[in-house]
Length: 502
Ligand SMILES: *[C@@H]1O[C@H](CO)[C@@H](O)[C@H](O)[C@H]1NC(C)=O
Ligand SMILES: *[C@@H]1O[C@H](CO)[C@@H](O)[C@H](O)[C@H]1NC(C)=O
Ligand SMILES: *[C@@H]1O[C@H](CO)[C@@H](O)[C@H](O)[C@H]1NC(C)=O
Ligand SMILES: *[C@@H]1O[C@H](CO)[C@@H](O)[C@H](O)[C@H]1NC(C)=O
Ligand SMILES: *[C@@H]1O[C@H](CO)[C@@H](O)[C@H](O)[C@H]1NC(C)=O
Image 1 (cartoon, rainbow, N blue to C red):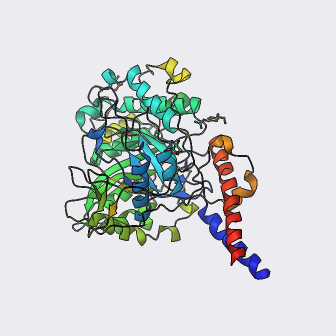
Image 2: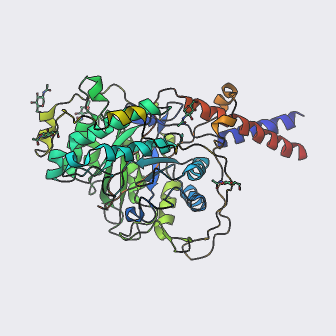
Image 3: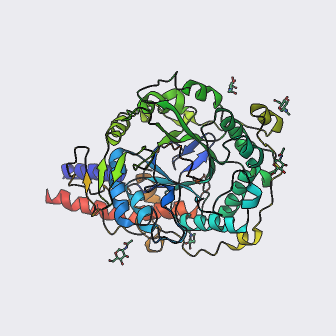
């Protein structure tokens, strides 16, 4: 009997650590944090099969709308070892419930860009005034409506590489802060939780530093300070594996320059491909070292699928089958030996820093940079308050399947026959079906953490947004906990049955 109890206890513990619902990630000082307040490190990849040109407004599918495709890629992303993906372009009108629920079940968060490459669906970098209008904000707010209901939505990118040269730097920065303000106001009026909002910067040594100072700084005026970034992503291809090391890559300079950030920083794209196949020495030798993690909260490797610019980890065939590239294997090997969980702790979080806005300080970093904080007014105040009108509000659904119908092949073109995802998060129940027995579950539920890496140099990708949940208590978080309850009990009952049978 004692032995049986011990076995049951062991089974319960083993399962409860697996059966973790993904809870919203929030921001604390310079780090993303999980629901325990521990640092959340992004280990991820950028994910946009088909590239940005594959997107049209009238399409019947986007990269997060096809359940079977998502099962296929969730299997491969899980095997790869990522906890986050960044997606650049989706449609606000399509249903993403299956894909977002599948990603949640394998422990993967999503950082989403709000923009698209289509006309009128992003801020024009050299003519921001002409593109910042009601039609544009309808797109942005509709995206928020479609994704705010998913607890594994980590954050929104309000813009990607909008500032990329002297002309754009001289006109667009105040517009990006204005868009961030509008997104954050919309979230606080219409979403059930805080969702982090940030910006993804181009690989330009001066402009990205000026941009970081501008987007993180505070004035003390609350109405203005809501326009700050909650996080800042760097698209950086400085370290080419097979060519560079910590010194030659300039990572040392990055580490000193961005020390003392008041907001989380991460590589929103990285993974230079000048030497192929990539060996990803920048993963264990750079991004996830102790000293870099004091400054950068992980990163996203550019990119999941092979496209015209040759950054893929896998090749997707026209029949939907997938063949792994050597890059996939090499990145998987790199992730397998990550050691950061052995040294990361709450001590990496610093909430004491501050950054006061000083336009001349920023313009001294780059003279072309417009650091003005007289922001344009929101051109859609009524819609901001009343809502975008998009009734396509995303929500959790139970998984229909854990098995893709598509074929997957390894590097040697041998078929991988077991392509079933491993469910590690049980947040698969619609809120309405969940009762509120959360307190017992709270301690048994651990939060899955995820990281993502990615890099992109493609100019065709216009803008992305991502948001991370910040630490406000939210009904979404509560219902996520509630959602964990009944499946957990069911699972324990199931294990009980197995144990008794033994
Ligand atoms: C799951 O299966 C049910 C019943 O076959 C179907 O109605 C529903 O559309 C499926 N859901 C998804 C997301 O495919
Ligand atoms: C927000 O919470 C309310 C009340 O629980 C619920 O009806 C609504 O569906 C939730 N919205 C989202 C986007 O989760
Ligand atoms: C960061 O802060 C430390 C301690 O205040 C200071 O010595 C250092 O110069 C700062 N670094 C930068 C780049 O501002
Ligand atoms: C603003 O920055 C300029 C240039 O670096 C500096 O001279 C000035 O003292 C700063 N102002 C304040 C109030 O810190
Ligand atoms: C900076 O941007 C603001 C807001 O767009 C604009 O009014 C101002 O003219 C710009 N400053 C310069 C020097 O271009």
